[in-house]
Image (cartoon, rainbow, N blue to C red):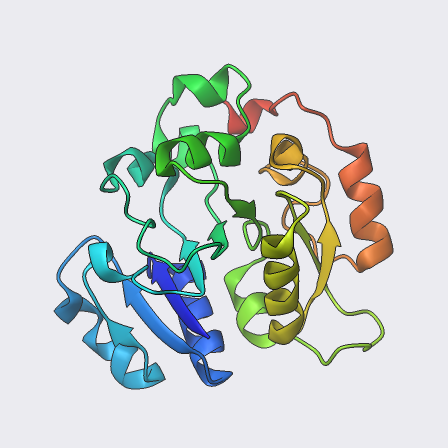
Length: 220
């Protein structure tokens, strides 16, 4: 598949490495000149591009940037993907640690709903709660006992099927985490966030989540 990745930090860079190694055609961008990604491109075989070009004709688009930078993305930045191509977003809101106050999120809008509104397209939330090093190194073959499960929030449609297949290919068990409106169940501070749970424990943690944002993940 052709996969466009906007963001080359810990998660975006790790997905670039993993997906390129699996044989996908990866185009990766950050907020700067593509030349700044020359080392990552040389290491992985991915193509470094301008952010405006990352989604062009892509089968899947991944947005993985600091939450505070989401409003700075160009309008329609993912619109050049193939019709029906799923858009994955991995972002997390860290108001005290990085992002500052984002009023809509403080008022209860789920993070991924806010991102979808800014991008102007539905998204699927996944990869936001796994440590990058485990994403890089801990994928296991399908059917392996104790395989790490990753929750996926978003519409129950062909796009979700494609995202689930990609998660499985990367070596993790996809778990239905409900609609995008329920994506708060996997936001920072929830029982599933940052955990390497299997399918059963992941489902239990999602069910135990509260929509109230923990104090450490609210603006001071």
